[in-house]
Figure (cartoon, rainbow, N blue to C red):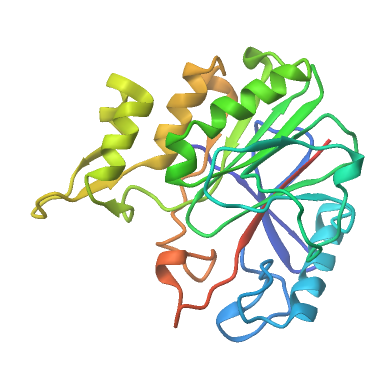
Length: 267
């Protein structure tokens, strides 16, 4: 696990990883204008938070990161393994309709921010400083076992990237302390990772047929299998479910209402 760097600008609190040298950030709940169960930096439309609040939050985020998030590429996440190579044609503003479904975005376009969203799932940023290629990937357990990271690295390679040159950051997500599942998730991880999978889950004490899963560890192992150097992978130690005042957590949603974190990278 790696200590990420806490940053605060005009009240917006976000994290950066020591492995990523271009503009990027993993947001927290702090620094926005939303209220109630959406307080305060909610970056998700359509969940009950007034749209004008979400738009104002994006404006604050863009200023904090010095990134134009109103001319960016956004994911339309479906817990699949589709990864899209984004160009200037994909530029859009927050809340605009997204005409494609993709849980991962890749680009080599300077100044094109890539945004992905989480609220317990694993956010992963990838950056190849030699080839000048970046990716933002939403790794829920289904996307993970469908090998979305393998697809992302393959798409980066199509733009000239080499796995050994990739730097990775695995951000705050639900930890093994809180990610309790049935046998279906470990079985899927077994099929995905093979014998290394046993390092990523274990039976929950006193609960037959239940398992505790370390999805961040699983994604780190997959990156290493893909050729990313272990020393180039930073992994956050923070669990979103354990820190509901700092992060949005799907499993902690109050009254079913919650916002979303945003993971951003921009060449």
